Each structure stands twice: as structure tokens, then as C-alpha cells.
Length: 169
Image (tube, rainbow, N blue to C red):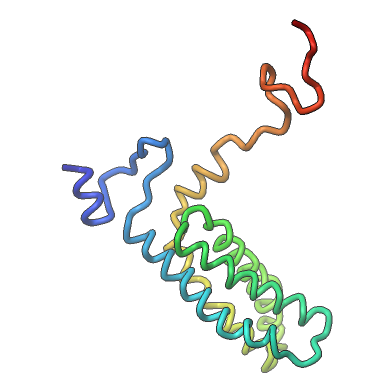
């Protein structure tokens, strides 16, 4: 019954773990993440792809920024299919934009130096805050903070590396 409630409503009384040992994420949240990835893919893709093929001479930093945004759009396509595996992409978006808002925009606003370009950037960057309640933070914590990292060395008793096979009979 509880499993049916979780599937139907996307909520349950307490978070539970699936058979694979990962924290379950509500279905509504998965679809919402897919919508965000689709918006990024379509929004940035429709802007950056034409610019990439028909751009005026870009400065070095402008070229870097446009290349980054096109890569973001392309990776967001993967996020539509695999929203949980691509969560680091959304967390990265949230982090850099929060850093810009707190480290660049806020000091300029506090010193009354908020010009038209900064204001335009603010209105392009600030909407990222809508992601804060959508990102499944328990899942992020369980899988990217609490879970042991990948190994750094060869396992003892693992298969020998190529070229180091023993010749004993």
C-alpha cells in the first residue's frame, strides 16, 4: 500500500531505499527535473547553436562562454533521460549562479553601482533560485557526500594488469 501511495502521489511518510540501495526520488520530482533539463536544452540550444555556426568575431572570453553554454545545452539532453545522474550539472548551475549573485551582484547593488549590464545579467541569472526546492537534496547528500567515493588504487586480489601476468604454472 505504501509503495502504491509513493508511486501514485510521489510522496511517502518516510523516504525509503529501493532495491538498489539508492534513496528513492518522487516521480513528480523526476519529471520536474526533466522539464528543467528540457528547458535548458531547448532554451540555450536554440540560442547557442545558431550563434556557434554563424557568429561574429568573438573575444576569447566570449568564445569560452558560448562554448560552455552550448555544452550545457547538449548535456541537458542527456539529463532528460537520466535526471538523477545529471544532477551535478544542475548543482553546478546553481552554485556558479549563486556565487555570482552573492559575490558580484550583491556588492554592486549594496554600493549603488548596479549598471544596466549587471541588471540584465541579474534578471537572466536570478531565476535559478527556483531550482533550490526542486533538487532532491537528500539524494544529492546520500549519493555525492555520504556515499563512499570510487577507489583510488588497484584492488588486492584483482586480475593482474596487462603485461604483468605471472608465468608460474
